Image (tube, rainbow over all chains, first blue to last red; front, side):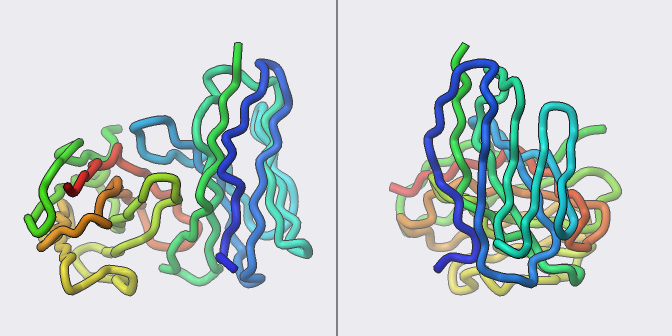
Length: 112
Length: 115
């Protein structure tokens, strides 16, 4: 079992839809959870960051962490064609200098 | 604020040849990372520097890969000799500090094709 599992998609939705992206993980010691967005031919950029369990909202984006289920989610409301990208989950241990462990990424297309 | 710069953007070589990539991090960022991203996969950390010292190189294939960060600023990653399976995007990232929670800023990557 890989440390971080993420469905690679592709996922295609109409403009305005609510998008749900998910990752599961096996290491219960992970404490920092991130979502990165990667446009084609670009490097990843940090979208959302959550420490431990709970929800975090930023505009149209909501990140959720359920540590009891080892499951994290990213919700995108009112999706736009500009949201079309690959979304990577990443997580790390609480101690300093530990590397980020990334999922494979989910490719999302929002159709106008 | 200028972002992380990488060059070249694309490189095509034949197997057994050598290749080098260059990275200039964001000014003032102490920590620099090199990642390998194979098509359809997430980035995998190859090496992490803090200033000019190596923090983590446990996943760097040291028989063929080497990296240095002279003077704690720019960094180069070298592959010698290259194999077909080295075809990937090599991403450089930097962060102000080195903790797990510090935001990493990524460059655009160098896309390597090994024929």
